[in-house]
Image (cartoon, rainbow, N blue to C red; front, side, top):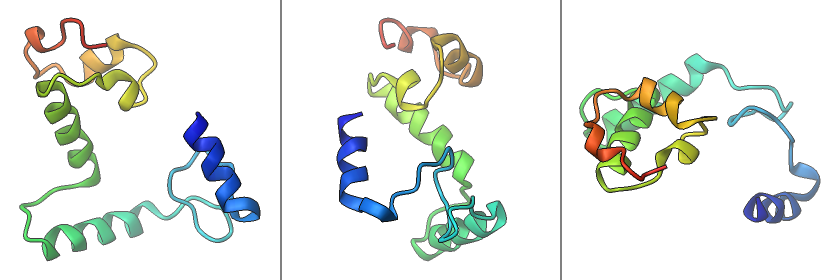
Length: 99
């Protein structure tokens, strides 16, 4: 929260309170198709195999979990149960004490 507050101060009047991560100059959410096309272009340019924004989030969750990270909060989930429901492919042993 402290980081968010300092970012708001840094951006000043340009800061836009929004529930959206990506917004345009009018402070409206960016078109999902625009974001997906831009993401696919970057993935292709760096020579990665097919990957979507959702797939990247899933890969992060898997890698963070395997590395022992606490992912429920990182992923913005309200509870551990939500995280476990979304990522059931991870072995139960990886979940122990990691929330």
